[in-house]
Length: 272
Image 1 (cartoon, rainbow, N blue to C red):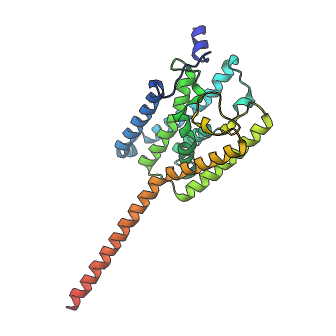
Image 2: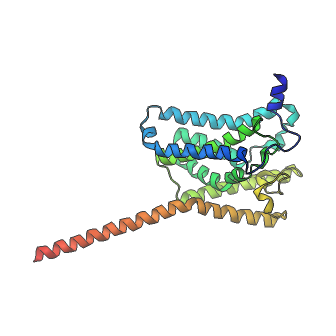
C-alpha cells in the first residue's frame, strides 16, 4: 500500500501525459456533457429542493480540488514543497476559489471576475495542460488538475443557466483590472524570487510543451503580446452577450415601431 500511495501521489521520471489524446479530451468531454445537462435541466434544478445543497457540494469540490494540490506537496516531501515555488499567484487557482464563493452566495461580482478569468486565462490550461506532463491517468495530480479546472466552468454555466447571471461591459472592465493587479503581483514575485520563478508564465516559456511557447522570451514583447491576446479573449468571451443584446435591442425597436404604427392607424380610423 505504501508503494502504491508513493506512486499514485508522485510524478514520473518521463512524460506520461500527451496533449490531444484520449486522456486530454475525456475530461473536457465530461465537462461539456455536464454543462449540456445543466442547460436542459435548468428549470428543474432551479425549483429543486436540493438546489442549495447542490451549490454547496460544487463549492466543496472546488475548494478541495484546489487545496489538495498543496496537501499532496506537503504529504510527499520528495516533490520538493518549497513555498516560494508554489505561491497562490495563478489565474486558475484564484478563479476556482472565486467560483466556490460565487456559487454559495450567488455573487455577481465574483461571477464577473471568474467568467472572464476562466475564458481568458484558464482556457490555456485546457488547451495545453503543461503542468501535468509527468503525471498521467494513474496519478493523483491528473485528477486533481482536471477537477480543479473543469469544475469552475461547470459552476459558471450553472449560474448562467440556473440563476441567470451574465456579464456586462462593466464586468469585463472590473475583471480586467483585477487581472492586472494579479499580473503586477506575479511580476514582483518573479523579480524577488529570481531564476526559476515564472508566475503567470510572464518570465519565460515553460520547459514542457505549451500554447505559450510561441511567445518570444524578450520580456517587454512577451508582456505586450500576452496583454493583447488577453484583451482579445476578453472581447471574445463577451461577444455572445453583445450579440444577444443587439438582437434584443432590434426586437425591442421593432416592437416600439409596430406599436407606433398601430397607434397611428387607430387615430386615423377614429378620425374617419
